[in-house]
Image (cartoon, rainbow, N blue to C red; front, side, top):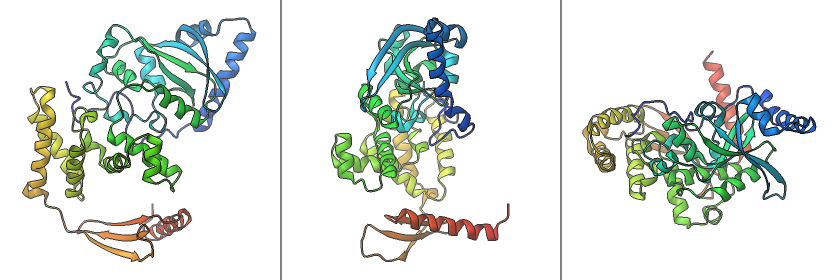
Length: 354
């Protein structure tokens, strides 16, 4: 049965969320774990027994030494987490794992029903900022959370992994379903944020796919995730489906929140007692009706340049409708964007007091 719209995702992840509180304290925890492991070994005690006794974590396997992409080695220990530990002590970082947790629901992980009997392959994780960060196995994690099951097997390292090592390890291990277009697009955007000079051709090479797929993925990544969540399984969405969602988003640009709320309520009624495999067709038809309905006529948007540049790839423009004004910049130097941001903040501070 599909997750009811409006309910809180039990995975504990919302799109774009970042943990900031207690960062300084958390950053010291990995070193504390490493020191603890060293001291326990020096004392002659068994590390896995100590973890089980004092932290409630049951280790069921021996430690393994893995060589990372950088040439460094890391020690992984297999553990079993119960439902409470999995819910409270684990997390998934999209920048490393690449799987958008907000798009996972019971239907999208229903192909993992064999986990009811046995988890053949343990997940892989690292201790980071005091939590267990899943590098590979986020769909398995989601299945255990949705079904509130104990017994999630995971290989965990207390060694500090460089960001690139963690990403490389996650990519090497992942053998589950291919990431959907939205996720691939988000990964590309993250890469471009880190290196603004990356072109689509270079991104295609890094993802081992065509440049056309990267172009489609970037377009998919621009779609509001709440529209994608209207569908039960994001991985089944085609290029045409993303094009439809993109049109709906643009049509309701100035009233998207209201339209999404309306669609959620409408689909809640339409999909009631309907088999899940029939949902996609009904949802798509409802979205098409949203485009053609009288209430959804798009207000006129006037676009005007703030400055003309020699290169067509560089732009600075203003978009204005009857309800909002926005400014868009493309290929502008970071230092210039920073000056613009500071100027806007200064002007707002002059006119609006907290």
